[in-house]
Image (cartoon, rainbow, N blue to C red; front, side):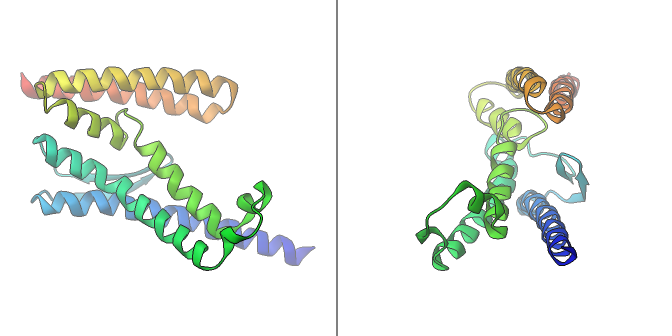
Length: 196
């Protein structure tokens, strides 16, 4: 019926708005952590694959870079925890949980959206946060240029896996893999030029 269709449209629209809201909060996490280290954020841009907080520069000290990169996913971990806590208090998890119930419950979908944002962003590949976190950890034991090259290599490995996976399951992953491959190379090149 028209009423059911309208409700479904409203729910889907609310989910999309929720996702954009979570992405903005994720990027604000990066921006606020960068500001804590005295680094201003130029702007926050929403992209088809997520968002981008354009900080003036990434801190070169490994621990600071790690904290700025990790701040975004940490926001989504906290949001997921708050939603899960709300669902638990409401008694949602006390009922028999079916795949259909998990897939159709509005709050469960928002919880899964945050979990997905965490998992996607901690993939150790540039430009994802995981790539910057990996470089920061590597930079504790090697120079920054070498750490960037190693992290870029790991990222390109993940790009190949994404591309292969995309050929069988989701063509969007193929485009993402091309972007990740290109970003890994660009990051390594930029760091080499800066060091030279």
